[in-house]
Image (cartoon, rainbow, N blue to C red; front, side, top):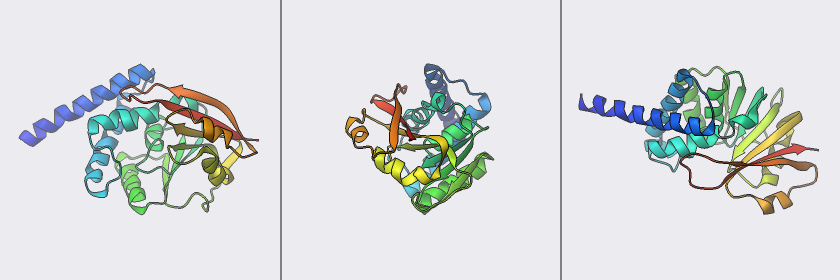
Length: 219
């Protein structure tokens, strides 16, 4: 009985923290989506004990460092029909975005079998019909049709990210790279054929670090 009674306040506290963060981000999600996000976080915390999927161990920190950090880019993906999350890892930012945008088709791509296994389990348990999980290397994988938005979170150098995934970008599509500090040097090193469209500074509630979203396109 004790274990059950202790688990309920913990979930309630996580949900409250998430709601406060969403309010600060001016993002509105219904109770179903908020519940799914907490279910996802709970499943991640459980798997993380064995499989070391993320360095963040504290579920309270996972709310800010993973859920809110991912959802902070939600306003920037308006109109996206097909999204690819490259190097998705434990599902960030793709999984929270898919939960928040059930009308968007999201593919989570990662070459790690253990991470792909976790993602498939999460998709099944949460009943996410708009999410596909692919365990392949981005350089060699092919998709049909291609994606109108390809996103990554702290994955690689901007030029490397765009170069490795450009064959998966639909005509008129965009790359969106989540970064910490403003990546001046990486932008300067971008190869010909890739242009920065905008750099958006993100304010993530509970995350006391600089965050930027670099939006790029192929010329």
